[in-house]
Amino acid sequence: MGNSSQSVTTRSADNLSRLCGKQVSITLGNDEKQYFCSCWGVCPGRFFMTQMPMDPDIQGKLTPGNKAVIRFVESGMVCGFKANIQQAVTHPFRLIFFDHPTSLEMLNLRTSKRVPIFLKATIQKDGEDFDGVIRDLSDGGCFYVMKYWQDPFWDDLGMETDLLIKFTMQGDTSPTALKCKPARVIKDKDDIRMGLSFVEIQQDIADKLASFIDYVSQFQEKDEFK
Image 1 (cartoon, rainbow, N blue to C red):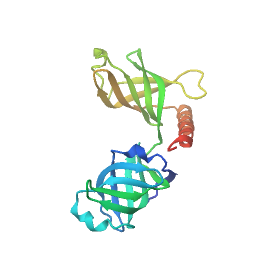
Image 2 (cartoon, rainbow, N blue to C red):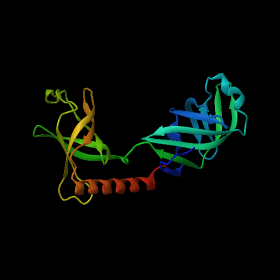
Image 3 (cartoon, one colour):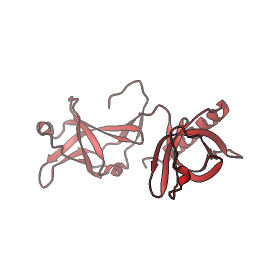
Image 4 (cartoon, helix red, strand yellow):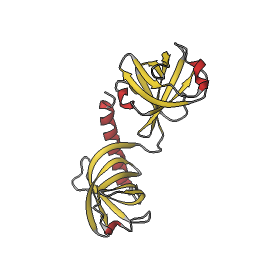
């Protein structure tokens, strides 16, 4: 994939079918040009199939055996693999078939580790508690979802609103409470979804949070991409 000083990890490519319908980029041979298209199908162990980009410049580069790099972005990671072209067809659909990879290379775009999670939590505003869930978590913040029901109590929610989020980590005998502020807010008729930034974290709690995120990350890595 090409790499920098950032850490690149390698993982299994066993469940690439999750990419069907999603956008990927293709580079061919030694060319640096990226062609964008969608994944249209995967047959594990046999092939990875994409649309043929409409760019006419690609036509002379689709010789069977030509080398390609396919990349996509997922959960804050740039993921990619190298593969040879098996064949390209234009009828009845414009498709490219690539060798199915055995592994993926993954580069983390985020400055801090973030883990997907489903963790019950309570958020406090103006002394009142509201239940919801944390959907992802890092040492700098989290993504929090709660029921809205068009409550006017939340109408003044802004970037400077002081909030307190409480949740239980592994080994907690009582909830951990962290001050936070909204960095991003999405409201619809049922939910409020908030990207929250933690503020004024004490060092012992920061260390505990980092350990918890590492634990969750290692646990997920055992089962991911199976």
